[in-house]
Structure formats: structure tokens, C-alpha cells
Image (cartoon, rainbow, N blue to C red; front, side):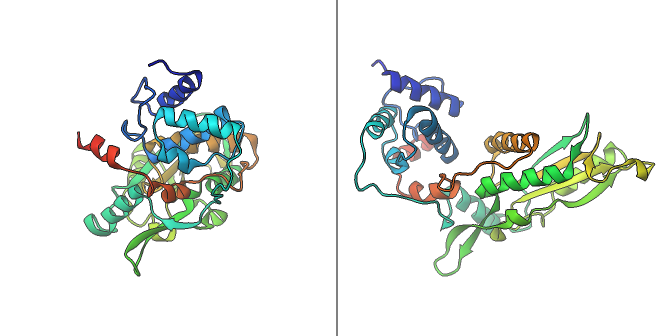
Length: 298
């Protein structure tokens, strides 16, 4: 069956977002091809910016009609009709955890224990040319953290009903670098990075401490030649995320935002009613997971 022009556009968005597929039919189901929550949010945001003249698309309808043709019908309908008695939503700050968050939290509570570090995700950047302002970088990180709510969200077990809850906190407002450490050679540097990565006290998920940033500075013979407010050549910036708000597919989103804010030296614009990661948990529990379960049984 030939795809319509709109379906071709949707197919292109799906294939660009879900990297392991290269084509779709009109009956392709988003869940059956292994699409995850982050990819769904990315696709939905592209619908709003590229395929719709309205920024008030109802995401719950798209979750309940997850085929390519279903999304095409909804985009056609919602772009040309005013939907009466629509369920109007606003962003949440307290909600049940997502299924993926529950699994990770359960692993830490039951399977591995709180001293496990298997969910620490570390990236390190070494300055090779020029220098960077630490004050400006700190402001940039605060702005990115403010936009990406999941990086200041706690996940905890509610003792009243034994349900994992996520809560958006304001910890981004008090973000600061961890104390600077100095190294003399690459062997020292590698050892420091390793110790940071296996530190069991780095995070406290139940209190929203899921992001860590630290500067490792090369020790200079002449201390007066070093500007303490700059990241200089050979200095290293270490960023560590807990896996509960972050996976490898999130890395580029974080780095792109950080690069934009630092280079432009201004805060990111944030839509007050933007759809955030925590909002997805509300709709996730309304999804019929039958096809997804069948996919993962294969």
C-alpha cells in the first residue's frame, strides 16, 4: 500500500528517531518495533514543530493510536478541527515513576543494594585548546538542568502504598561544581576518574541527587600562572549521571543544550507548559502494552 505524503513525512521522522529501522508501512506500530518513551517524546515534539500548525496536540490520542496511519489521521484531524471538551493538561511535579525508573530503583533497593555503582554513567572532556570560563560554564549547566527536569527529579518508595514516586525538585537552583582535584600525570588522572566513577556516595536518587560535575586540574609548577576561574589546556571536566534519569541516547541532547547555552552566554528558553519526562508516566500507564510484550518475547 502506498503511503500518503503525510505518512511519508511521519515515516521519515520515525526512521530518523528509531535508528534500527529504515522503513515503515502504514500499519507499523510504534511499540511493536521497540520504540521507547524518550523516542516517543522526540517524535511527538517533531510532530508539533514540523507537521502541525497547532502546538496543542493531545499526546494521549497518539499513545492510544500508535500506528503510523493512526498518527497521520490524528495530525490531519487536529490540524483542521477544533476539538471540543479537550482534556487540558499541565506539567506535573509529582507522579508515579516510569516503568524503567521502577526497574532501576528496585535493582538498587533489592538486587544490588545502595552501595552499587552499576548505574553510574560517566563522560569526561579534556581541554586541548583555548580555555573555558568556569563561572560561565556553571551558569550554562544551571540553565540546562532547569530545562531538563529529569536531572533534578527524585525517585523514592512511598511507604504508604509501596509505589515508587518521582518528584521534581528545585535542586538545580543551588547547583555547584564538586571540589576541584589536581593531578600530576595521566596515571593520576585515570585513577581519579576511575574513583569518581565507582564512588557509591556520588548519588542519592531519593533526594534528587542524580547529576555530578567536577573539575580535575593539571598541577602546575608555577601556581601564579594558573587562573583559577578558567579551565585550561589539559584540565578535565568530569560529568556523571545516574542511569535513572539518563541513558546514552540522552547524552547528545544534554551536550547540544550545554553547547548552545555556553556559546551564546544566555539561558535556554523554557516553555511553561512544555511536555516533560515526568508527564509521560501518566500516559504510559494508559498504553496497551500487549504488542510490546509480544515483541520482547521474540
